[in-house]
Amino acid sequence: MMIKKIANIVRSQGDPKVVATGPSSFAPSDRLARNLGWFSLGLGALEIFAPDRITRALGMEGQERLVRAYGFREVAAGILSLSIEKKAGLWSRVAGDAIDIATLAAGLRGDNPKRGNVAMALLMVAGITLLDVATAKEVGVRHAPPKGPRRMYYDRTGYPNGVEAARGIAARKKKAPHLAS
Image 1 (cartoon, rainbow, N blue to C red):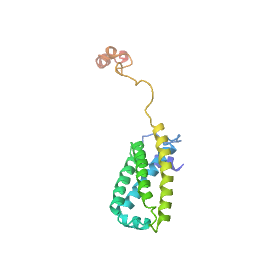
Image 2: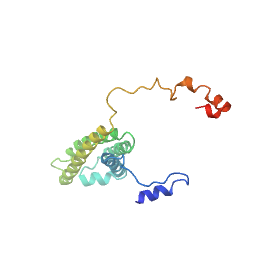
Image 3: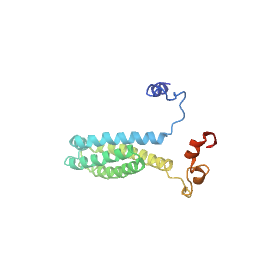
Image 4: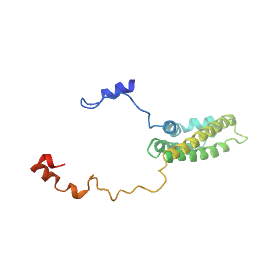
């Protein structure tokens, strides 16, 4: 209801009014890809601007530059996930998750007093990885190019009766407007 009102406000006076809206072409997988893209941007910003807080919470002090680099990777994946190339963005998120898991696994060493935080972070990254993989697969299937031979239009002119029939229409219309068609 609200969408119809908003859509009708921005239309010019001569444009047709929106009476009813149809189904959206924006599937749940597209919506989830968009949300994961925004999540990537937020997480990446956190990793870029506050890597010391992250490393301190995980007991991995001294890895701030690495976390900041991961932040830039996360921002790039987020931008891709929000673009037309969302499939590439989602698969780059999956690859980044694998790197994050490997880095976090190193934090499970016995002398780390914050192993519990690292284990919790690993669980969260593993859950997000499953979500990333499922979304990437679904988006890949949904946006795959059609199978079969490509349609070729090289033999079409755009004129319903052919080019020869269209020649001279303007001249004939000037002479006898009722005979031009």
